[in-house]
Amino acid sequence: MESVFMIKKFDDGWDLGELAHDIYAQEEYCTEALEIPDEKIYGTEMIGKTLLEVVLTDIQKSELNEDWYINLTRVSA
Image 1: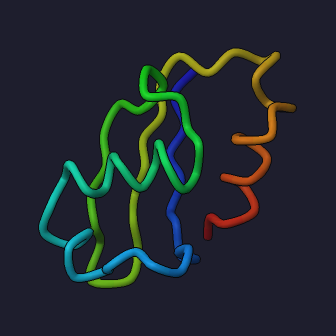
Image 2 (image 1 turned 30 degrees about the vertical axis):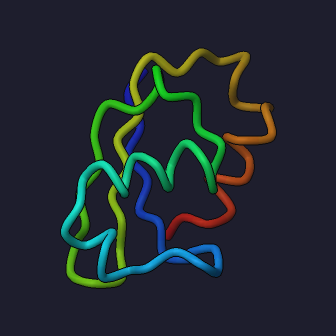
């Protein structure tokens, strides 16, 4: 199952300017701040300066109740 999330709330301390221009910083934000397992991240892209699109892949039904997934749904648009 593939899922797309639009992140609109960012943790303090992350530079949105850097996230806007650096795909590695975007993925680092996803793994460190959002605690998304690296193997679940298919891709990321900044939309404008305030919205981060995160595409996840291979999500299992059992993962829908994990803390990282619940948090991700909470911070997404």
